[in-house]
Length: 320
Image (cartoon, rainbow, N blue to C red; front, side):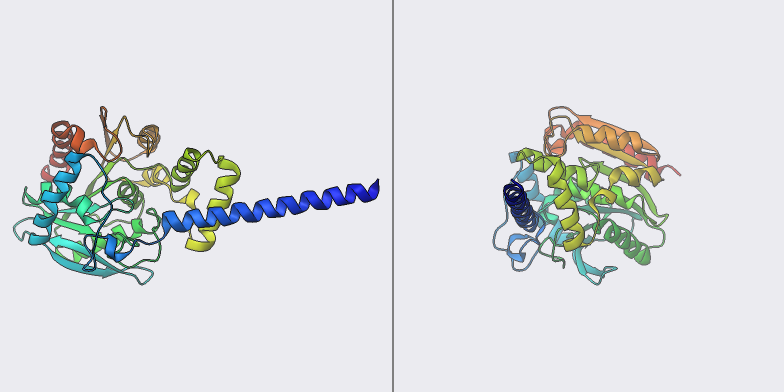
């Protein structure tokens, strides 16, 4: 009897170890696929570009096709070094007669092309615009996509770069999707006083919660799925997903912020808007765009979207 019990316990332990190893392997594989760096040939800003993914509504894709050549034509490429030694590139369009500056951070597996229609809205108003290629996205350096955990610190460095060029600069941070999380988390850091506002369009409340949502899409439970994912990210990429949080950042922020989300967004759940907005201690405004899916608000209701954005900018940039 004792011998049979011992054999059963050893068998159960073996099954547990095998299941643990298998789950670790597949979680690790999933992280490599979802957070591995983009290849330069997939990034339109890279000189090695061959082809990139096509996504979004026809309105969005048309806007990008029209705006990206214009952005490149009026811009020069500038670079900075990050705190961890990476070389980051950006398109920088200067208007010497203006002290208004836009820093626009693109989304997950996107590029400056995806940011170009937003950037050109401001360039057409006479603003200076700076559109970085985020780390790990095929143009700038980076061995992985960090989901904003380190890119928020890059945003601070880009703001400092602008101030080094123009001490009288007035800077607007702007981001969509992962770029939104990037700039939102940056507002909780030590930004130059030149940063006057932030537009945060459809960002996630924390990297941890966004990963949990995506795991749920594949019917993987939060536990043990996120236990493995969180610890593997710590080991492989050097940060804690739970501590990389827009919610925690806006509790410390003093930067006036316009929060935007489409109420039909299921990729970054619409409910995250209220979570972040409620936590924010900064001057804040909110825009809910009816029927807009993920990163589609500006193209679903362009008049509502841009009138709200322009009104917000007018309030914090032109009023002295």
